[in-house]
Length: 402
Ligand code: NIG
Ligand code: FE
Image 1 (cartoon, protein in one colour):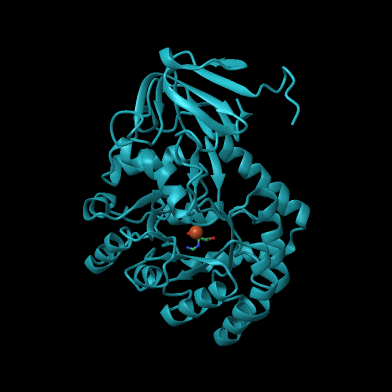
Image 2 (cartoon, rainbow, N blue to C red):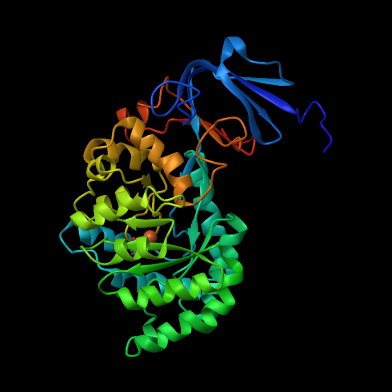
């Protein structure tokens, strides 16, 4: 690569009021905070992080004017490849209609009707929206196609947006298989997986009453793993059930929702946190907000020793937010996390849930994915809920927003 003055090789981000590194060896507290800090970015990576008085020279300088810099959010759960609108379903829920996964079929019908270009345009808009709010890594699932062709189409669109692509043909049983769920299982684990496995990194299943039971979920995850996909699970969203234990059993990177957990589930997640490749409990506060459910008890999980991530679950049905700052505010206000724990969960926790060690922190060697907040420290994320505070975002060392 040629480095002209327009593309400096090293960039000094200087005059940072508080730098959150997520590396306790670099700074104070569990999120490794450095006051009066600087960062040096080089070739898309963090080359140096520390007190600004000790910063090495660089080719270019960006002044943070005393603002806070955090690792970019790692949103490990979204369903942004879809068409259609379900705002009325949301309004009905707010007047007492309970959430049911049945609404997924409304989005499936609209998504099948949409062209590839429409799906890509909608997904790109949402990805840009997320990025402007500080998200620098975003997982994207299929699951609103539910035919071989439409699931493959959704994954191709997702692959234009991110490397973290998840096959979720097992979102619900496709409408045309309503009377033949076994037939749908054969399709998902056979021809659909054949077409989709080359397009994805992960396999996911909605293990819940009304979607897939434990045996069906195990069969789907195992079939995906046999094709080289890594497992993750939607579980324990609408009630206690087998999702968590199955996720731990198959060594899933994450089990997501975890709104209703038994004591045994909490113990299993605490045990799974000690493994070299742990199973993370990914909590989705926006879903419980938008479906008027109780919030998961994040405090109980952390106190037991489980690893907790926060993600958006951005989708048109159960939660149409792309804001990790909102998720952090709810997690601090209503789920028992400290602001440090909530920020860690939305960055380093998300990275663990995606089995990534190059994102979610800002130690030397990490990807230069960062967000600058219009705030002196990260407490403001929960302290000023609903206020846009992300001033600028860098991904791989390049300014992508702000
Ligand atoms: O993660 N729980 C299942 N799937 C999505 C919701 C999908 C929808 O309602 O459209 C979720 O919440
Ligand atoms: Fe989801």
